[in-house]
Amino acid sequence: MLTKINHLGVAVTSIEEALPLYRDTLGMEFSGIEEVPSQLVKVAFLSIGESKIELLEPTSPESPVAKFLEKNGPGVHHVAYGVQDIDATIARLIAGGTRMIDTTARTGAHGARIAFLHPKSSNGVLTELCEAHEDGH
Ligand code: CMX
Image (cartoon, rainbow, N blue to C red; front, side):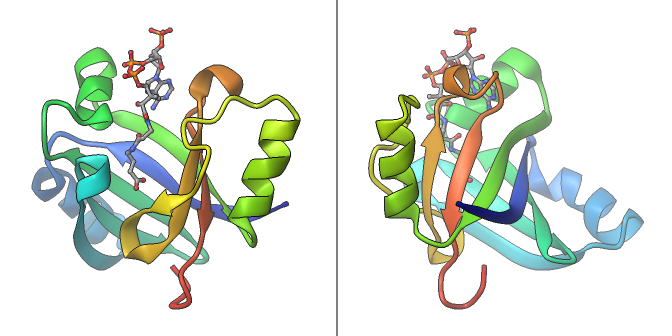
C-alpha cells in the first residue's frame, strides 16, 4: 500500500531563517519554495536521496501549521508516505475504521495528490498520503 517515506514535514516560523541549516550546513539539495494556498502554507523542499524534508511556514494565523507552532514551537509536523493509488488507499483506510482529515485526495505541493490521516487515528503522528505527480515529486 505504501511505497516509501516521501517526506518529513518540519514546521518553521520562517523558511528564510531555517533554510541555511538544511541547504548550506547539512548540504541538502534545495528545489525551491512554493505556496500551497489550500493549506495556508508556503513550503520549501530539500532532497536527501529518494526522500525529502518539507519546511512549512504558515501564511495565515488560521493555518493548521500556525496552530501547531503556537502550541509546540518549531519541530517535526508530519510524516508523508508515498502511495501508488491514493484513492484506493483512502478507501481501504476508511473501510478499516481509520479517521481521515481528508476523505478525498486534494492537491498539495508540486501537484501531488495528498490526504491526511487524523493524528488521533495514528498514534499522535500526523500522517500524510502522497501520490506523486508525473514529474516524480
Ligand atoms: N501532529 C500531531 N498532533 C497534531 C498535529 C500534528 N502536526 N496538529 C494538531 N495535532 C493535534 C493537536 O495537538 C490536538 O490534540 P489535543 O486535542 O490532544 O490537544 C488535535 O490534533 C487537534 O488540534 P488543533 O490544534 O485543535 O487543531 P484542529 O483540530 O483545528 O486541526 C488537524 C488539527 C490535525 C486536523 C489540522 O492541523 C490539519 O488539518 N492538519 C492537516 C493539514 C496540514 O497540516 N497541512 C499542512 C501541510 C501542507 C502540505 O504538506 O502540503
